[in-house]
Image (cartoon, rainbow, N blue to C red; front, side, top):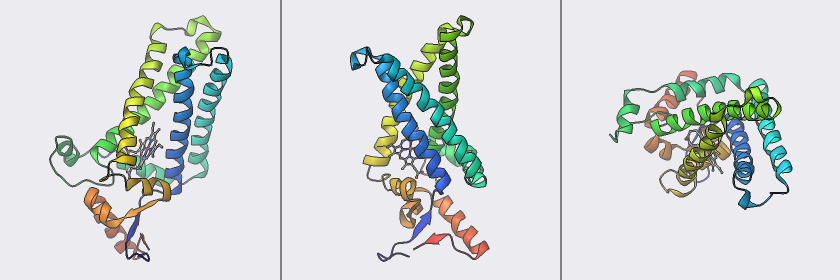
Length: 215
Ligand code: HEM
C-alpha cells in the first residue's frame, strides 16, 4: 500500500525491463540509420560510410547487450516470461475475435506483438549478416535479402506506431508505461486489463505467504 492508498503489483523485473529497453534503444538507432541509408534524400550521402558503421556497430552492441542480460540477469524469470508469451489459449482466440474474455499477464495482442518482434529480430539479424557478407563475397548475394531487410523495416515502423499509441497515448492502456519503466502497476488497473494474472499473483503470494504486493 502506498501513501495514496493504492496497491501496486510487480509486473516486470529488472531483467525484463533491460531486455525491453535495450531492444527499444537499439531499434530506434537501427531504424533511424536504416532510413537514412534507404532514403538518401534524408541527407548523409557523403556520410554514408559513417551511417553504415553506426548501423552495423549498433546491431553488434544490441546482440551483445541482450546476451549480457541473459548471462548476468534473472534467466529463470526470463524463461517464465517467454512461457507467458507462448501460452496462447482458447480465451486468447476469443479475445482476438473481440469477445470480452478475461486476459492473463499479457493479452492476445501483446502475445502476437511479442512473437512478431522476436521473429523480426531473427530475420533482421540473418538478412543483415547476409548483406554484410554479400559485400565481401558475392556468393552470399541473394536477390531477396535486401527486399526482406527493407520490408521488415517498413512493417516494424507500422507496428511501432501502434505500440507507441497504446503505451503513450491511449488513456485506457497508457498506465502500462509505469510497469515497463518502474516495474509495477496499480492493482486496480491490472484487474481491469489482466484479471487472470492478478488472480495468479495473489494465489502465488498466498501460497508463499510473502505477498508480492508492493506499497
Ligand atoms: C519509447 C518507446 C517504447 C515505449 C514507450 C514502449 C512501451 C512499452 C510498454 C508500456 C510495454 C508493457 C506493456 C505491458 O504492461 O504489458 C511494452 C512492452 C513491449 N514492447 Fe515496448 N515500448 C517502446 C519501444 C518498443 C520497441 C522499439 C519495440 C520493438 C521493436 C517494443 C516491443 C515491445 C514488446 C514485444 C513488448 C511486450 C508485448 C507488448 O506489450 O506488446 N517496444 N512496451
